[in-house]
Image (cartoon, rainbow, N blue to C red; front, side, top):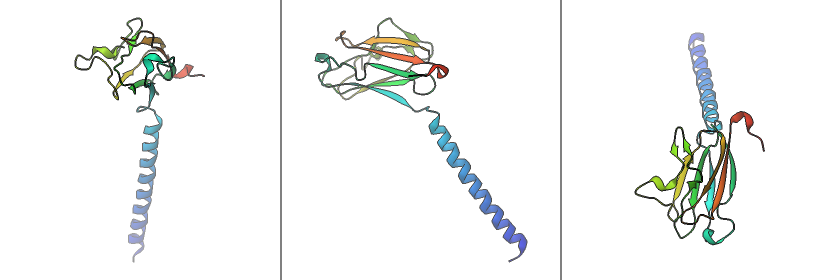
Length: 146
């Protein structure tokens, strides 16, 4: 085998290794950005009769990291998630799960997701169970503290 063929094979192997490392780092970097991360709030079975109506009842999220909240209804009756003060996000609209004409309530084993894009404290409740209450605290990336 000539030295130029051997050099070509070695160069090809090096390029393949560099591409593999770059591709793996790119995938890890994409996952680390948190673009797909969300925070889950459970509506537990018999929640309209319990003290723990939303689990957890207070959550903290960070804009651009984990600012999508998903409410999952594990109860046997429908619930909703509605802003106490009619909050409307500048990108995602009104914070209100009842706006879907086809599915105005979160049915059993169904979910509702909302992405918050503004820093703030957002209180919410369920209808027809207004005593069910929760809070989403949205922080900017620079203010993310415990």
